[in-house]
Structure formats: structure tokens, C-alpha cells
Image (cartoon, rainbow, N blue to C red):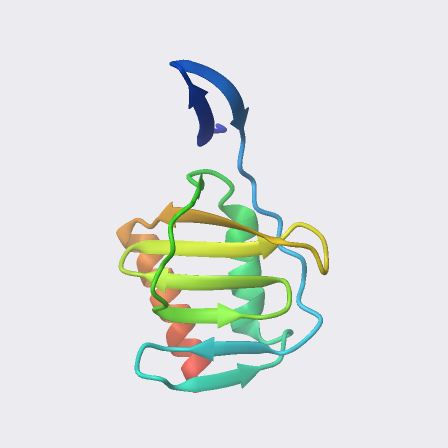
Length: 128
């Protein structure tokens, strides 16, 4: 089941609509994690938590919305091809559609189960 998640409305008429399906390019460099307390970890792009992040985004292609807001960083996972900002039951994803190109920012509300998954990822990164 696909979901229409973004449209532009002008004078009451839909003039543009788009399906959002983030495709993550595998990082070519190390991945950095920063948490709200200021802790920083740098892990290899091939580390299991990074593979899990990419797999989760690939497997969860619905529920994304374009974002035009700025977000204060929470727990952040970043590399040369994407940035994940994990909030309370929310995820902000900035990703490049092509290596070296501008990023697209989308958001997704997380269910309790999805939020637990991401909290587990954060724990695994901190233990790496």
C-alpha cells in the first residue's frame, strides 16, 4: 500500500503531488553519532548499526512527509550521504538522491515499536 504524503495546493487546487520513497546511498566514509549530552562516536560505515539504519529506511517506504521546518538536533547519525535526527517518536531524515547532490529533508512519526528499534540502534552505536 502506498501513501500520498505530499502535495502543493494553490487556490484550493492540487498543482503538484509526490510520493516520497527515500533511497539511501551507502556511505563512503565513517558515520558519526552525536547525542544530546554531547557524546560523539565515529563508527565504520560497515558497522552493523549502520547497516540496520539503511535497511530500516529501505524497508519503511511509507509515512514520510516533506519538511520545511528546522529541527533542533537530538540524537544524530550522520555521514556523507544521509543524516538521521531522532526525536521523541519522530525521525528527521536528510538524504542525498545522488552522491554530492543537495539533501532532501523528510520526517516520519514513529510508532512505539519503531521508536524502540531506533533507541536500540542508539544503544548499539554507543556500545561500538
